[in-house]
Structures are given as C-alpha cells and as structure tokens.
Image (cartoon, rainbow, N blue to C red; front, side, top):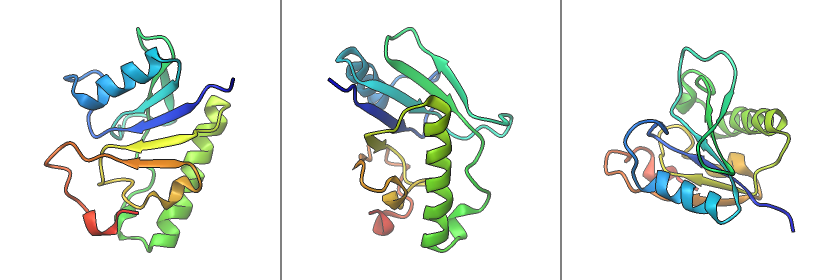
Length: 136
C-alpha cells in the first residue's frame, strides 16, 4: 500500500504554540500518513530545510519566500511560480504530495498550483482573511 504524502501549509511555525493544524499533522502521521508541515517563510533560509520531529512520519519544512511580491502577479504567473516551487520541494524530498492542506490564504490562496492533487482549504484563524474571494 502506498503511503499518502501530505503537505500542510501553516501560518504558524511548528515550534510555536500548538493549535489545531499541529494536532491534525500529529494525528495524520500517527495513522501512517507521511506529513510535511511547511512553516511560514524565513528570510534567513537560503534553501529548503527539512527536519524530523519527535513524531514518526512527521517532518517540518522551512523555506524563504517563494517569490517577493507574489500576490501582485497575474494568477497564471503566480501559479506557474508556485508550481515550480512545489516541484522543487518534491524533488528535494524524493516524493510527490498527494494532498495539499492549506491553513492560510496569504501565500498560497490560488490553489491551482497544486494541480490535480487533493486540495483542502481549511481556515481556522480569524486573522487569515486575505483573498477569500479568490480561493480556488
């Protein structure tokens, strides 16, 4: 049986306070899914950093911004850049994500970059109210 690869995109870092998205990640990993938890952008990181956690099947990822000013780009350009970023991440880990679970809508609000993967937009934070009408 193939293990499902899940990318969780979070507005809160893994090592800050634990909220629902952290608990979802832990639960999915404990059920045998391979979970990558993407932290908010870190300008001090030059390349994607992947770290293990104390939980089996659960990894954190930290990266710089995908592109500066991305929200001002036309949708097709934004999706192209984000799609390239996703493919770069997948090459880095040697696996393709089956699911992209988005908990914020300031960076990746047009989920078209995830192509035919299962896409879940799950807004749980009241302060994440960017681009709601443009979510796909």
